[in-house]
Structures are given as C-alpha cells and as structure tokens.
Amino acid sequence: MSETMRIWDALSRTDPAHTKGFKRAGGFSGTAVKPMWVIKRLTEEFGPCGEGWGINKPSFQTVQGNNGEVLVYCTVSGWCGATANTLWGVGGDKVVTYIKANEQYNRPERWENDDEAFKKAFTDAIMNAFKFLGVAADVHMGLFDDSKYVQE
Image 1 (cartoon, rainbow, N blue to C red):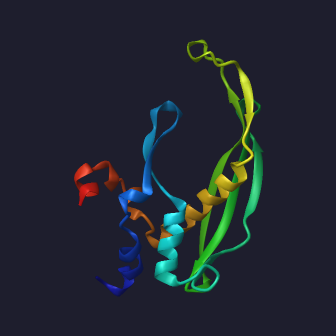
Image 2: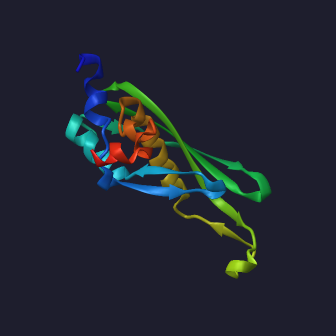
C-alpha cells in the first residue's frame, strides 16, 4: 500500500451490512451506503467530528422544477486532518413533488411536500464530499454489482 493511497485504501471497502438497495423512477437501481456508517468510518480514521474531520455550514438553493415541482440543492464543504484540507460536495432532493394519478393503485393526482428534503440534500452533499477520500469507493465504482465481490 503506497502512502498516497493510505486513506483511500482504509476507507474504500464497504461493509455490506451497512448498505441497502434502491430503485428510482425509470428503472434506475443501485446500492446506497448508510450515512451513519460513513460517519463512523470517518471517526475511526480521523477522530471525532470537529477535531479530526468536519463539515462546514451548508448552503441551500431552491429551484423551480418542471410541472411546478420544487427542488433543493445543498453545497457543503468538509475537511479532514486540518480545516485547510477542503472537500466539496453537492446534493439534492425534491421539496415539492407532483404525483400522477394511477388508477391501478387507486392513487389520485396530488402534490406532496417533503419536510425532510433539506436534510436529505445535506446528507447527500456530505456523502458526495467524502467520496473524494475514497469512502465507500467500492460501491461508487460499481463493485457491489458483483455478488462474488460482496460475499468476500
């Protein structure tokens, strides 16, 4: 293991017990890593949040989407080792979503508000910032699509 890859190698393997599969509209599916596991791994590697690693104040932007939907984007900077070691991440979610009617499921047309959207966008931004250190790199590199890799 080279010194330049030390942190990446330490953080890149994901414990399958701390992942879950997901599916999005349009058939896209993948593996999500549980955020608390990432926080635990960062703490194991660098020490407590605020001392060995941390997150700076997030910035939020709401954007009008198609069909009257409202989106939120969060930009956050994180750091590790020293506050000058800055990592940037962007995350997003829908604050207001248009739900089409679906007779098969007896679902009426409606609008839904998500009071967790800002928190989800913030968490997404944190996860994206710390990917630059290699956190859960095996998931992001598609290795979790290989069942043999996961079983190892």
